[in-house]
Length: 256
Image (cartoon, rainbow, N blue to C red):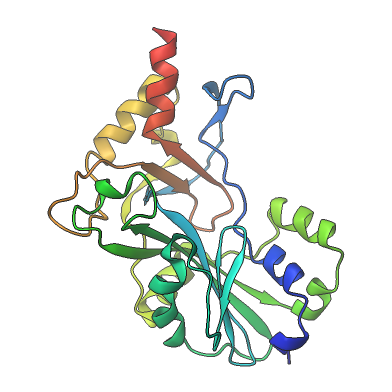
């Protein structure tokens, strides 16, 4: 069984980071605008709200310990007297992690959550006018055969992660996990056939406005309610992409 005290924490950090998610329309490396090329989808597509906060991780281990992390760093381990206060992640998620079950001996469990509101980002006012902080579950993985995985060189682990080899939960599995853990998922907006997704930049901007005119993740009645965007994903999470209002507004303004 894995013992956190004997674990290579740099490797554990690498294999549990959340990977980069492509934009629905490709980004132009020259100016950050959007191009006409888009991520191809097939079959049913689930749309979920993209919440503008900070990416966080709860890593639970079979020895009964856990770690909390931001997208890039590990911030806290169970029992620490002092934790890194960055972005309010530890303060928001420590009690959540304390209540989670210990994984079976054959796996490490990672839950990915968006921590938002408070003073987390400049967009916090979209979700709260009272500086409240919240969190939403949006993905999860279970890592089995973790001893062999953690023994690999760090560069290989980064390639493994960014090449899409993390075993993400399907939508059905994620729904069950959220229910079991008592966690709230990012809002589910629709399930559409891929043929009904928008094609052009203008169509996608209108699509975003139609399906998410106001955030569904508000933390109090004084929030401004401006949403960030929509994440598109297949039920198996084989294909995933994000579409942000700001990207389409900026690109289309340039084209006028």
